[in-house]
Amino acid sequence: EPEVTQTPSHQVTQMGQEVILRCVPISNHLYFYWYRQILGQKVEFLVSFYNNEISEKSEIFDDQFSVERPDGSNFTLKIRSTKLEDSAMYFCASSEGVAIRQETQYFGPGTRLLVL
Amino acid sequence: GDSVTQMEGPVTLSEEAFLTINCTYTATGYPSLFWYVQYPGEGLQLLLKATKADDKGSNKGFEATYRKETTSFHLEKGSVQVSDSAVYFCALRNNAGNMLTFGGGTRLMVKP
Image 1: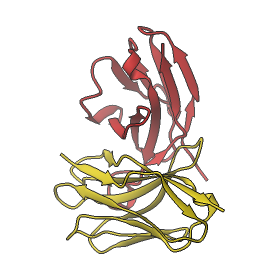
Image 2 (image 1 turned 180 degrees about the vertical axis):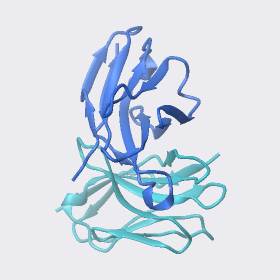
Image 3 (image 1 turned 30 degrees about the vertical axis):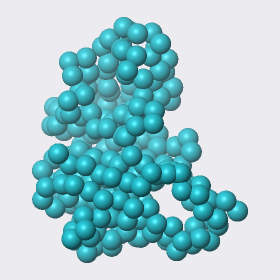
Image 4 (image 1 turned 135 degrees about the vertical axis):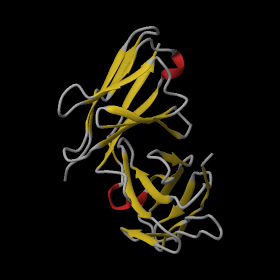
């Protein structure tokens, strides 16, 4: 069964450093998403991406965040200058579309980011 | 804005007990409703969904009915197993956008 994959599974970085989290969505899916879950808190939406541009973003997704689809398979989340409060589990997801029958979002296993 | 409220856990049950995890929501329009499950060390997996009022989603013995009058989508299972131990997330997608709004998650622990 097709699945969303994410790398790395764990990342430790120093405050102020740039990190890139990588995701390979399901191959025939057209919409891609990033969510995060700070330890003990809710899963929060960051951004959705379609047709090579951001279609929706939350207030969390400020100028330090960016997303890119650099080739036909990868979808990346870049955090330019990490802060302690960026420590969280980051989930990538993808869906076929946004119509009722295509809307289900399939999630990857997550990348746990720790900022020291 | 949209919101989802779940009962806090952990919920601890004995094997073969009946499970209910409550979920209520606030949203404009007619959202789609979802239950996701997260097993230890894994990502979020879709368990079931419902897209309109009175729809019942079901999978692996779990059921949830979309109740618009009470804005609820409670998860039920008649007889839980140890392998059902996981964290369960209720979520909604408002059709005005693409994002999922999640509840806080409920940890279920099933003892043999």
